[in-house]
Amino acid sequence: MGIINPEIYANLLAEYQPKVIKTDEENDHAINLAEELAHRQNKTAEESALLELLIALIEKYEDEEYPMGNSNPHSMLLHLMEARDLKQADLVGILGASAVVSEVVDGKRKITKTQAKALGEFFHVDPGLFI
Image 1 (cartoon, rainbow, N blue to C red):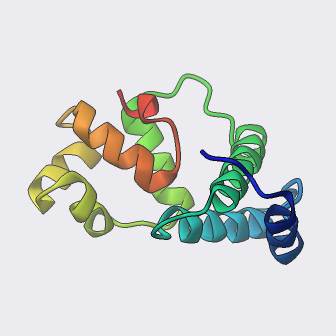
Image 2: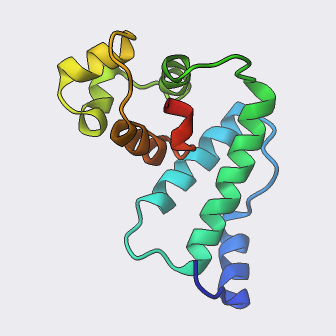
């Protein structure tokens, strides 16, 4: 990740004010910010550290509020799609052709390792959730 400049990191923390997430609204805000940081080109070490912090806060909240129990790759995908109000068309750029997306979402096709990696990056989760 690189060496973090404490002053720059402190300024980022002051600007974004990350905190323990207690509501779905706060979680949505944190997810939007994490997605913005994740897609930023040439992230600084400080931005990467803030992104890691946000992901940890989001995961903590979602693990507590939406325990997955005995989840499988298919149910995990459906859960994440529902949580972010996504439609199958939103995954075409990640999984491939719309026919492939349809088969994956319908549970007729297993998620490949390459697709799992892409889904992990897209949803900011461990790709292992989809394998």
